Amino acid sequence: QVQLVESGGGLVQAGGSLRLSCAASGSMFRINVMGWYRQVPGKLRELVASIRSGGPTHYADFPKGRFTISRDNAKNTVYLQMNSLKPEDTAVYYCYAVIVTPTLAENNYWGQGTQVSVSS
Image (tube, rainbow, N blue to C red; front, side, top):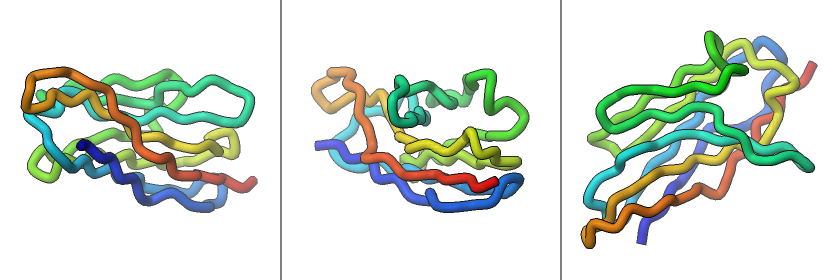
């Protein structure tokens, strides 16, 4: 069993910062990709950023220059540093990971989500 546990969400004023963390635990052979999606009610879940095991990152257009994704492979943890937050960043943020199990199956896993609310 693999679990992704997120932390770091909350309420912040516009212009403020938050740092999200997501730790993966359980039976894993390798974590290929870790990243973050977000979702607001009535809209599809959208990619925020992702990072591969070797370090390459990918960002959606909207967080570029404001959000930074990083990863600690030793801790199986991914971080999302969010600066210059805007009210439109308000959403539930979900951690995800593409993990290879000990049986060499590659599966997608999701965290439970953490609420980020930005007040104007």
